[in-house]
Amino acid sequence: MIIAVTSAFGLLVAGLLLHLMRRDHLHVSHGVGWSVAIALSALLGFAPGIFDHLAQSLGVSYAPILGVSIAIAALLIKALISDIESTRLRVRQQRLIQRMALLEADLSELTGKKETGD
Image (cartoon, rainbow, N blue to C red):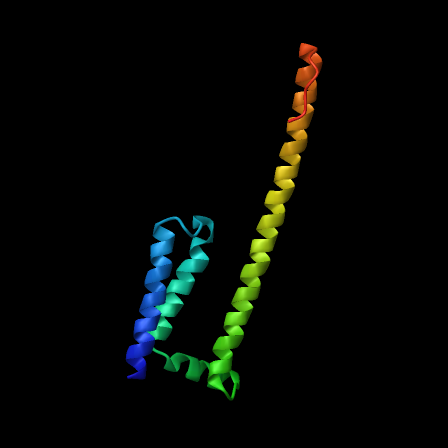
């Protein structure tokens, strides 16, 4: 019974992630990472004993904590990547704002008109 539940859950998560990728709700640039998540979710859904064998080979005495640890590490890496991307976009936005201000100043200088604030 437990294999049926984990299989259904794994397929549900894999299907949801695949649906979100195809509908462009998840950015394609992260497609490889999400594809790995889909494959792992489906694999672990059908073969939950993989964690038991992996934990045993790594010397972890309580196998579910290995999954929790991997999930926490994956979420931490995802948060770090999101922060890096957010910072990069914010810097780009600031540079575009500065460039636009310089171009507006040049334009007002060339036309001789004084720009009014928005």
